[in-house]
Length: 210
Figure 1 (spheres, rainbow, N blue to C red):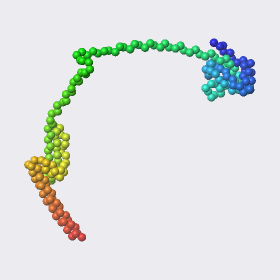
Figure 2: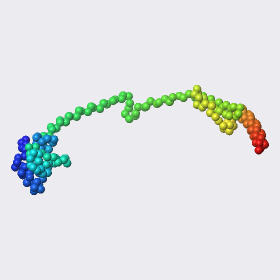
Figure 3: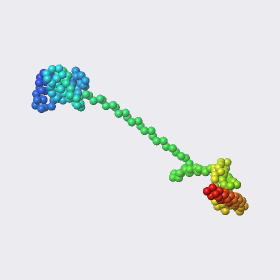
Figure 4: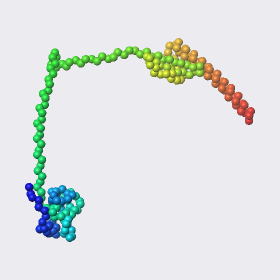
């Protein structure tokens, strides 16, 4: 291991001469240097006046700062490289377990064992109940019951759709629906005539009022 020797007066004079000749000078920090790592290198920039105390200006490697140090904190002796850490032993790989072999008895080579067939669930038929309801004013609604679950609850249906559906139903059903439709039509016609009469009477009264 090289012995670290601080800068002497002769070293400082030689550094000054090299700087004057435009040469780059590299120094290293000793253990006495404050605020830096011992053994770190730096470039000498120049000397301050007067040449007393911390008068040697340097720029540490990897830094942009310009710092001042005394000769006791610098050396021209390059520190010995740090020993490399010993390599860790590589663990030996564990042997892989041998693959297990499963022997199936009772099968000839080549054919595969038949896979069990999945039984499909038997679906029971569901009872559907459709109910049509008509009011005295000719308004129709439908109610649908699937099994015990009501899927449609008295949904309004137009009289025209009911008339179309009645044509595909048995004659007795179509006749009953037709009778209800015709009765509603008669009531609506009478109501229209009544409204017309009331409208004409209201218009006469309005004309008489000027």
